[in-house]
Length: 255
Image (cartoon, rainbow, N blue to C red; front, side, top):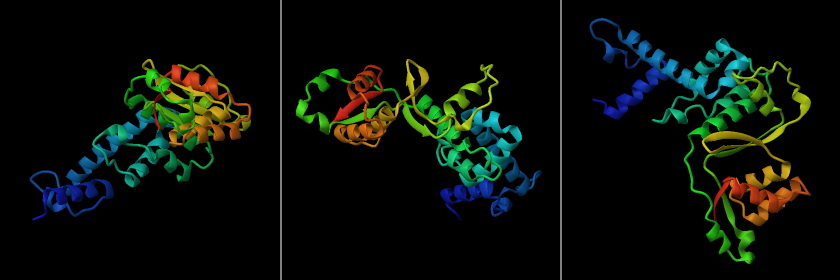
């Protein structure tokens, strides 16, 4: 007799892939095994579709209900939920949209989805205590270049060739703007961060983005500064560091 785990895996395949192997085990008086599986399948797909709608409201608004539900169904089949936490579901949706038939003309759509996924992750990210300034003051100046800085857990970076921030803004429920977007208007670099229980979307300069991105990739401070100056030769590292320490973007460090 199959183990419980084997039966659970088989049942999940039946729900997501349409396998018929479980149908005979679900036959009882009343509904057939196939019909019972369809009930489970409909409930699972409906629940996961609603989760995607909650995470990607701007994408939903841009493409409409019919297209979104069609895309969601294919996404769920290809990327079934693998976590007991529903908030973990939907991370591959931006990459999925980049290759999904019918979304080809909306070339900014994957980046818009990346912004919404970053917003979602920031909303649910852990809190963190502010930077220990006394510990920072104890670091010898000769060691500054070897510092590795840590960004707040409720913080994400995003760069796009399209004006995704403006697209996001005009597609909020409370927006009264009816402007037409010019995709050639230029891209944007964003810091998505939760501060004082509010999520903020901040535009970054080329140097500031390069600096924070290097920190996120665990580069040493000296290397991060080199990358920032390469992106923006006149970048003011001191002012930027003071701002992000004071506003809790940077919360920890180590040598």
